[in-house]
Amino acid sequence: MAETLVRIGFIGAGAIARDRHLPGLKKIAGVELIAVANRTMESSQKVAQQWGFAEAMDNWEALIARSDIDAIFIGTWPYMHRQMSVAGLKAGKHVFCQARMAMDLADAQAMLDAAHAHPRQVNMICPPPTRMPFEAWIKQQIDSGSLGKLVSVELRSINGSNLNTKDVHWREDIRYSGRQIMAVGIFAETLNAWLGEYDWLQAQFDTPIARKTNAAGQSVEIKIPQVVHIHGRLRSDVAIHEYHCGVATDPASHGTQLIIRGLDATIRYNFGKTIELARHGQPFEVVEVPYHLQRDWRVEEDFIQAVRLAMKGQPWKVSPDFDEGILYMRKMEAIHQSARTGQPVKLENL
Image (tube, rainbow, N blue to C red; front, side, top):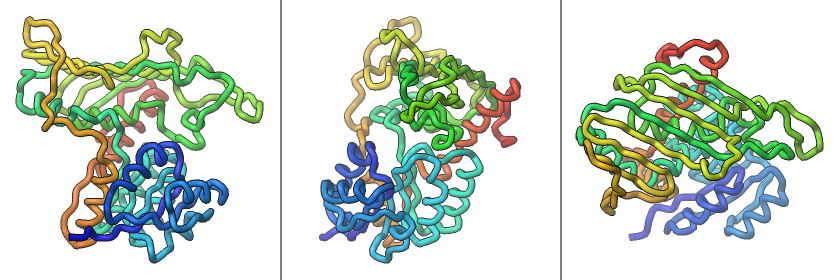
């Protein structure tokens, strides 16, 4: 039986679109690439030719207004996510928004309000790769009580992504990234999915490289932190500490590790490498996670499946949607507020 046709418009087809979303969409039967709108017509034409879009455009508002498009992918930087997502939902389109969700909590709330006002349209945020492939196994260990009473959670994310002083990446530019900081939001969403939200937190920022030279040769102030300490307590009454650093000059220390300690066992996850388990009194051993508990990248397939259900008037579910996304946006707001005031922040008060 032929699949329901889903017609796609793409706004801002950058690196992740070319690496992930467009290859993923091309593999799905019954998906038609209708139009793409980048910042320039030249860029749009290049993408259209390479990936088979029927038309190249340079006006995202005109793309959203088209009657021959069912769903839009928003691949721009966060500074445009609210405007484009709200416009897409109001135009009756299903919306896939690239991570991170928005510039700040207020923008995220506007996106969520629009989603709730148009419940028949699918809304989805691109999930972080950190949730793959072992999320199901990790949640199983936690939810089953296999680890025993949880004692603490420790997350360390260390790299040298902010060391270049001769360039200002858009992620370092507050005009485009807003409240986003390095990969803090990515791991906020991951921790929320696995362990639940923070009850309260306290944060401290540092920006060791305070100025950089941009592409125009101008010296600019860097307003996005390069080192972040966070400690607090989850709603499940578990202590948690995070350390994020983008200016580590020693490559040997680069990497991301999550440790979930329980009274009966401890999980140690070296993201992108190994996942280990240590039972009470025993050393860590590498876990061979059963295949049925592994899930690799199926982001585009999940979105299209949800769109097809919605088009038939049937219930749909994706993760993360805007309801989930606002949770990590609330955490980002709390982090900034705490760092600014020097005081702990209770998330439910935001």
